[in-house]
Length: 357
Image (tube, rainbow, N blue to C red; front, side, top):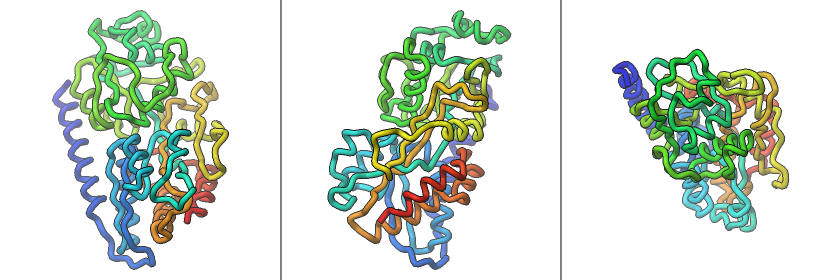
């Protein structure tokens, strides 16, 4: 890795540490009727946006404290169900088994609900000396991460990139070591678009042996930037200074963008069989519509539809309303690099948030 890339990586890590500290400690003096503390944990992909949302919410509500720990989506859902936190951030929605459990912090007999609040492309970040333009399709990506494709000059990669000076070196493919909604979204894309090359069902847990494992979003970032001829999947908001591959969508290679991520969400249906207030998007990963980027992460706030503690419910509702609001989404886009929900979709989510008690 070049000295420039090393210094850039260190700068991002330092900036992230400062941002977390600011969000956690910044407290406003503006009076509002809201007061109390919300503790939350979960998605590391959401962490940057949560820092931004929390800092602004606390400035406007001087008697409120919101704490968010990016421990990973699986840990977040588990702690929320067990009653350890007021809400969770998760890059994958509650599954049937989880929905059947008792949610300790919710009113008796009421399950948790999923509310999409954060949208970002997932990108394939790579570090290959001399290669700054790389295009991949789903089958080739599946081959790389399953271990079937082991070298950068493999014929499948060369065929997609005939003008690239691909080295004969071995590929270091980096995946998440922790249970991760980012992993579930990534494996969902591979399984839906290239099922023959990726027969494994979508899962928070990485299903294949081999490769290099790294903890959390920051771990993948560090492994890719610190590795040799490496590639890893990562939330786009955390990869702004990295070189990323284009995806083959239909007959064209597509670069990621906020607009392309929002576009695929808008053309995707909601998942069927769920309660009306449980909003889960069934992303159309195989879409070949112009202008869509199908490898996208939809991250949720997992909350109670009704809290056992009415004051906690009021505070949670107010905070989530701020997160989904046009102002909150725009702020996260500007300061954390996420893609804002479209106005129509955000309005649908806000209708449900307003019913939280």
